[in-house]
Length: 500
Ligand code: BES
Ligand code: MN
Ligand code: ZN
Image (cartoon, rainbow, N blue to C red):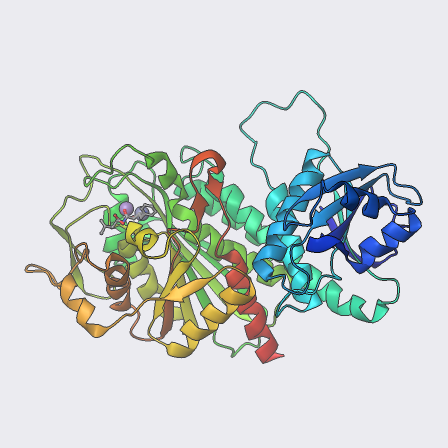
């Protein structure tokens, strides 16, 4: 999709569809006012029928509106004027995108940046629009037979501001470039995660990452079981033992910063299918465990966005990729494995595999002498109980980093909330036979998982994102969301601004 910003009067806009906003109570946005005047009151006529009230997300498509260069006008309800929140603005944008898709509009022009959104600048609103439209446009149909009717996808998206607003253009273009790179990264993550487990194996995921690195001209390194053995990554290997698919450690390095700049390290859980191992999961919804590599895909996608935007940062992404399956060779409950940092772990439950593969990876990344390490993982079902499907959990050993991630999440509407990582929770991980148990019982499952990780992150600033509730949707709209890519890219953009 091509995305551009333009200064354009809606009446002379020759896109296939011009989108303008209307508020409750029949209040027309500036762009809608221009349409109404030029058309001899087409919008007033619509409002007078009472069919359209301006409720947030209402849409009405109008054809043959007099005085318009465009063949269609999409009237979009924005809710109460002056009280539009970012969440409502996004909701309206999603509704517009669905209406555009329903009408098979190829080239659309959104005249919506005249909307005052509470605590959001115009560039921030532009980002919300791009994110919403590209999210709604996304589809994953590689494995379906081609549609009979010819498709006409949205190929061009224009964000339009008033003709007099040339001053705003440069800033908006910058925001759109950032949003577009974010959108591509989100789509890449969704593509990886939606791919079924029989295709998206550790080897395949590593190949996709290598291909990405090739496109971007950045360094990639892939380690297999022999290298892991040599490094002493027995926790990672212990998870992979039950699988015919060899594990992979995927390492991408983007060097956009000064040589001596300590890198930001992103670590993502890359379990390409989690059956639970010998501690087998129940069958219900087990198919969704192909999404257990969403953290890994997001960490890889974030480096793609950073490279595309040429951020002046050094970033390393490391993804341990493995399946977690039951087998005669699989790790058994009660087995003890030694981690790369020397701690022994009693694997009481083989379904708590994410923390095992992450632990060795978190030890591995010490070699990069990181400025910060951020890991992301669909780690615990308990996180869904704690925070549901709206908000991811964040925990860490550095207040500033946790704060920065919360702020980046707020800005990108990809929110995270902190859970406490108090020392006392560590008690729950005691094992009678090893240094550490890999499970801490039912209470505070998300926290004890992070406690486990914290034992491998003592030598650097670290934060952990538990994205179990937000990385994908179940049910009718089953599919990966691409979260927390927006948060990560926003965090990186903020870091880049501090450097520049
Ligand atoms: N990948 C799962 C976590 C998960 C489950 C995410 C359901 C989203 C939906 C993880 O590997 C897992 O199985 N965790 C266990 C840990 C438990 C055994 C301590 C869990 O949450 O049940
Ligand atoms: Mn598991
Ligand atoms: Zn898992």
